[in-house]
Length: 73
Image 1: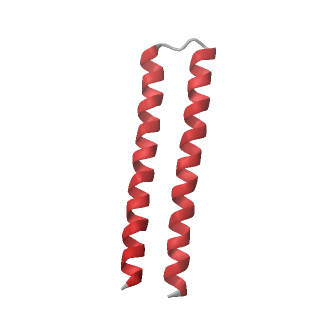
Image 2 (image 1 turned 90 degrees about the vertical axis):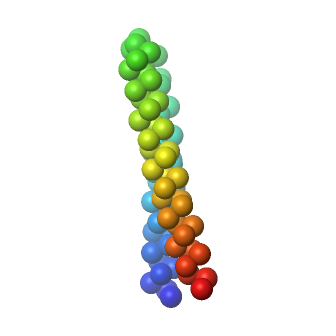
């Protein structure tokens, strides 16, 4: 069981890192887009990339949830 707990902890850290990095990079991309006067199309691309990062984080959280469900049995 300790090995399973360490795996679950690693999954949680990875999900947290993806969420934090996506949020920070999204804010930076938005600020850079405004500062350099990038077109709305390019800024929308940044938004879509951030959305992809958050969806990936959601998948990681779902996998973590499923791993914890299996750990209880």
